[in-house]
Length: 75
Image (cartoon, rainbow, N blue to C red):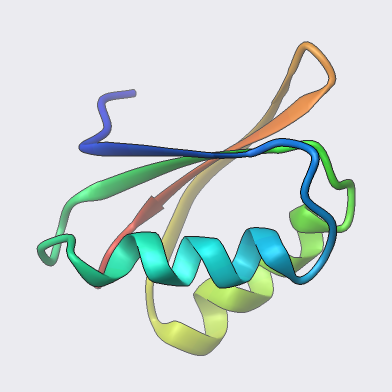
């Protein structure tokens, strides 16, 4: 999947992956896609909750090499 910006939150514990994701989305245009890589297993639940609360769209969640990869589209 194509993305416009990537943020690597590997090694960060909750709530930092969400806080940093929110900051990464600030300077993005509506419709652009942010790729987030995280190693905290809690990020799976947190990213979906963040998307639901903010209106952004969580396009996909996958696991690659022990890391979780999220594709989020800015509203």
